[in-house]
Image 1: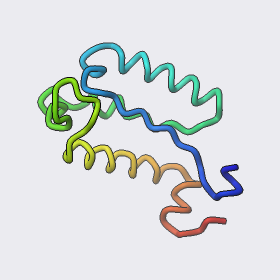
Image 2: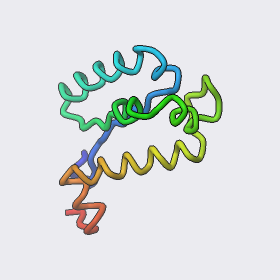
Image 3: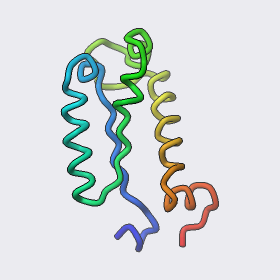
Length: 102
């Protein structure tokens, strides 16, 4: 189906703030890494990027302490991370940056 539509399925794991405050992000990160690899699906896992941030920096990305949603700053940060990762996938980079869908 992906070839027919000139598309590639990519999963993205965006940890919530509460997951980052516990071991949940690491647990789900490991599960998703194993499953996506077993299924041959690319995964953009942003847990490590988020863990490199200070607690204060993480707080600036979410509107509320228990929110799983990002604020404007968080959405901009995540968009840049995803964009950088997509550029590393040759089949996606070709489509994004040359317009070549075949």
